[in-house]
Length: 209
Image 1 (cartoon, helix red, strand yellow):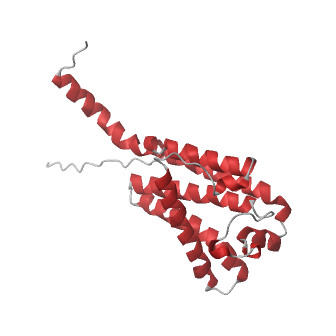
Image 2 (cartoon, helix red, strand yellow; image 1 turned 90 degrees about the horizontal axis):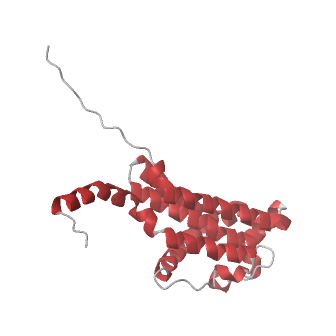
């Protein structure tokens, strides 16, 4: 049996603790990121219903439930907010727009304030919004996604957006593009402890002559 002296253990902890503090959030979120990527890959590649019918691991289900519903509230608020401008296209796109912009705003705030966990949370939510919205876009043609309040198929955001823009036939390519934007953001989120800007420490030295 290998015995570790108290001083050696203290030295080990003191050396590794900064890395634990720096990386723990990224590490514990790896399963969440994997499940998120897998769920929507399955939805876009094989069957769109995976977007709302997916068997989450029990320890992740509460997190998906919370984030899903939080972003849903933000999405609906986006329709209301951008609807104030009186433009139909802006009203329709406003839901997805705010769903992406609000988390991105959290990221920007965290970055400026040098708050690592706030920054990473903003990145994670922004990635989630892009990936989740990709399934909404992929459903534009068939419109099988259940809409809030049992709204009719004619109320499908991306069906209306793509129809108005004349790109409905390219809905799948656009959806995959949105998905990969989200995946890229997930990688940035996980690697943020390496990517973040380190603040330099300055020492003010006064020399009396």
